[in-house]
Length: 106
Image (tube, rainbow, N blue to C red):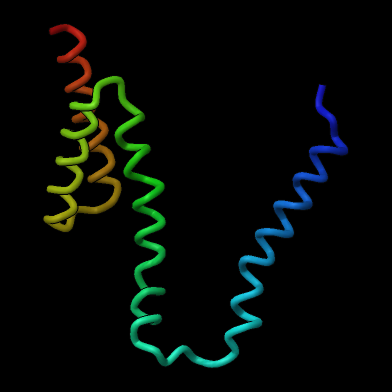
């Protein structure tokens, strides 16, 4: 059975933390950031965070690590040649499916 009071306590704490993480930088930094190092650092933060969240999921979402590596390679090659996100996702997923089927029967 769900303890609703505990659930809402956790929900309130997480909402507060999320709000503070977004609000504190806006309060502390009023003007435009002029330091080139900090500006370039902040420019790459979203890409770094997305990579840190995505790369482990790629390798642990398949039954065989080799299928994940081959699917990632296909995605990187298609991305290098400026294919769209849907095309990259479909071909990488299809590659993983085919490789897993081959490995299953070998």
